[in-house]
Length: 409
Image (cartoon, rainbow, N blue to C red; front, top):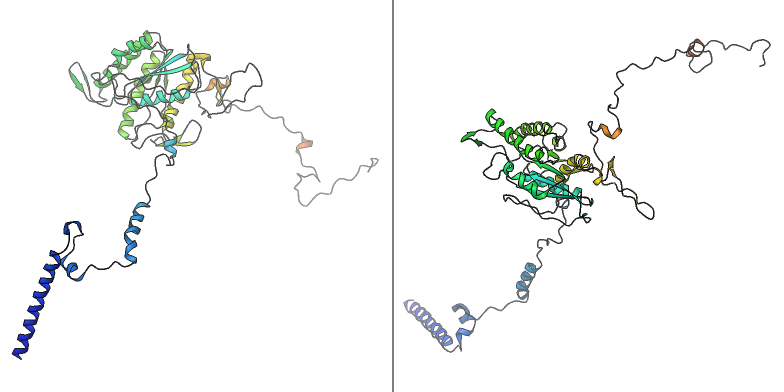
């Protein structure tokens, strides 16, 4: 038994020695081993495993799946959303001391003597300027110029002082009318005479009203008509409350100076009077008027702001703007050939204040409280039901009167 075990052990040792010698011999006689594929010792001894036919196509199939994977569609093939399609593509308002927005290609060529409407204000006023550019794009006698400073206001005079710079702006532009929309950035502390006042305190309100009066006085003393557009509501409730108070300051100062104050608040709230992101556009369709932050204005909202300012500008500039009656713009008369039909581009909302459209100073239904004229009493012959007539409901029915003797049947 011991001899058998010794024989097996010696055979195993001999086999191990032969395998080792064979491996060394193969490695020694392999030509240019660095140029061949690196192989393991197991593959060197027993050979490389043959690739089955199905395995040959697996890498190619995986590669093909990677190539044909669905990719994100290009920007040119993307379908524009309604919000992107209604956006006015105008350059953003620059936050420089005084910035001119780029001029887009007008729909019609402006006349050399076209009247200029100057728009000054903050970033909300910049949206109003863009809307006015679109509103008067087809009016050759009106051109819109704007001097917008996005972060400006009447509080931070260290950033930009409107009262100190408006005179130079007016002398440079020489507009036919001035449209102002400032105040969205003024909910902050104010420093006056070295003292800082918290927003909406009595001292703050008095100093703020003083600055607004001085600004308006500079415009009116230069002889320019003024249209002040109030601020719309904003999503933060506290901000909207403060803006309401500021709008009253603008209204009081503007009307005292003989200007026109335009209140746009109701156009950007819902039926309950609360802030809303959506609302009716100038065509009466539901559209997105405000951005997601509840502060900025979309393209449809900018156009709606401009719609509120069109009527006072039309009254100031006279016949330069085509008259609009019931939302239909009158077309100029053609010198030859038949006249073109009027193009309806919007439906004007009806306001209770627009009494001049009817040429009357009375509201509809003003005579409802007056008692109507007494009606003539009906005669007993006609008012009393007659037997056999449709209004005779007596029961049992009375016999109908027979023919009078001597009268024809």
